Image (cartoon, rainbow, N blue to C red; front, side):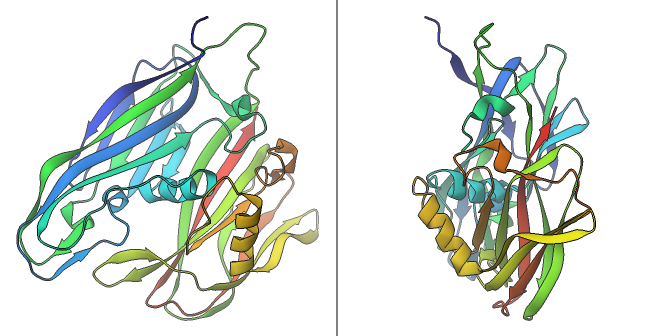
Length: 330
């Protein structure tokens, strides 16, 4: 019997400092399950000096990823580290090879997973991406520079130019056996900056609502923007509430709950993944309930959906980032 799935490299993207590199992904037709991105390269820090490794390298080298279908439909949008953080929620966290600040050569490597099948779904292929012969996928990768890896007062350079391999996992359609997808699974992100002080009832995290759009997950990532070392994960959320409004009624599908309590709840429910790290607060609708789509948060009849957050003062300057996973029904 022929194999049901195939995994192959479909593109290799070469680093270009402070530029967005656009790549058409060719040779992908049929049912696309996921795309893997694998980044590798080497950084040479020539001499000892006042050097600071970026806290979230090497993912900090790629501040923007966008995957577009037929030029217009955005399937994936966010930073490289957004998918590093998602992997910590949905899978065993993958090891990364990072750069340090001391004078040396550092071979760095990171791999992320951009799924179209529903993470932790009872039937993940409900959202497999079905591509026809005329469909087109474009991947836009925005790169920073070597200072996004190590902020150095001495000479440094990329001794091996970074590349990103794009690997697609596809599956065969078997007539009368393989079910048709029922929707598209998208992943996007946005952030706000509550600032350097404590906040009570902070309401800067407002989500989009639309007919036919369901939320599969909402993950809050808290970062502190530290001098020299950049964004680092930090936990100062004391309480949070997810509030929805529709039809003249207001209700709270999540909360009030403490930040640590939310993390503990995740750790107890999801014993197949690593314990959630500092700064990551997962709210999983479908995955928490046997993967059934009926437990997704349907935004069709909502006028407003937002977080209300209490947070203590950060070390320096707080950023709250929301990683969204949505299913848009056909």
